Length: 74
Image (cartoon, rainbow, N blue to C red; front, top):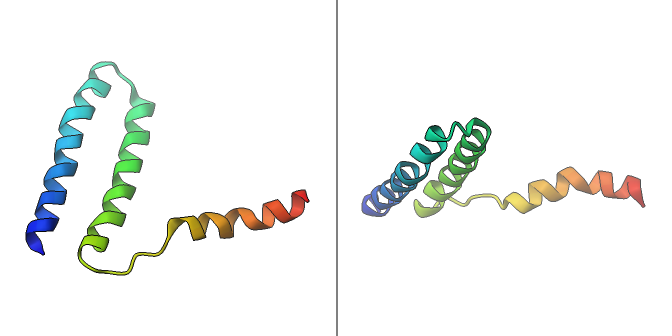
């Protein structure tokens, strides 16, 4: 199990090493911020899932957030 987590961390590190230097070089700060947020969310969801922890479905949270708004717009 630890090997899988280590491989996942190596994969995320590789993605960071591949993407971040170009964003910094081009001074794309907003894109770097968005990239960092999405990467952190991806790590936060994938590591517990690999460890066998039941991870809640993010689409249910989105549905709960927007369902009242959809009801108002009907």
